[in-house]
Length: 218
Ligand code: SF4
Ligand code: SF4
Image (tube, rainbow, N blue to C red; front, side, top):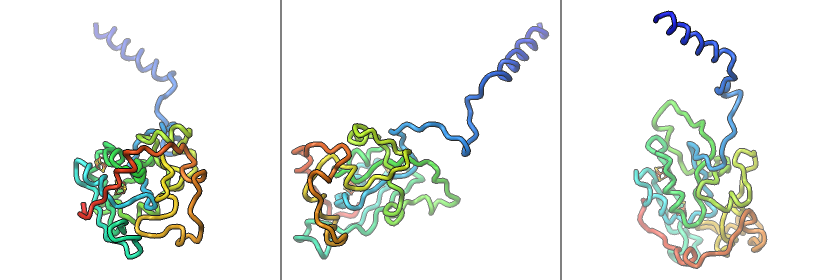
């Protein structure tokens, strides 16, 4: 009885000796990543962000902190907000993506990277400066315009803010949140054909009317 059990055990060992391993030698080798993969980071486009704080309000864990102030260069009082703080506390994030779903302006995307390990909890908070400087390789999750364009986040090509939207609103073509983007860059506002070149879609009426802004810091 014991002899047959030992033989069966050795048979399993022998089978695994000749089987091709399904593990890989990370980090030298990497598995192909799905474009909808929700990584351990976020991609944020300040140029598209109005500071409406919808993402912060929808986050079930309340880990997005946004502080805005009326911009001095606002066309009219309260029309645009200047973003002062945009922090995401990654250590409590469950990557549900509700914040991305809530963003009406395609300013926030799930990221595609996953190597954000840190040695301290303080460093697990993504700050507005980190978001500004981070690589723009957005996940295609909940962003059908990126999928329609066949965008692969790991292809190596970062996307600019004009390429990621579903619309070609005038507001987004020429201005930044609280700032005159065209003047700051020394260029003229983008034409319709240039804006949203990656999967641009007609502007939904309900989105255009959802231009709500919050004066409350989230
Ligand atoms: S992914 Fe979910 S938990 Fe994380 S910041 Fe967004 S809404 Fe909050
Ligand atoms: S919901 Fe979008 S536009 Fe509004 S504050 Fe968040 S990232 Fe910015």
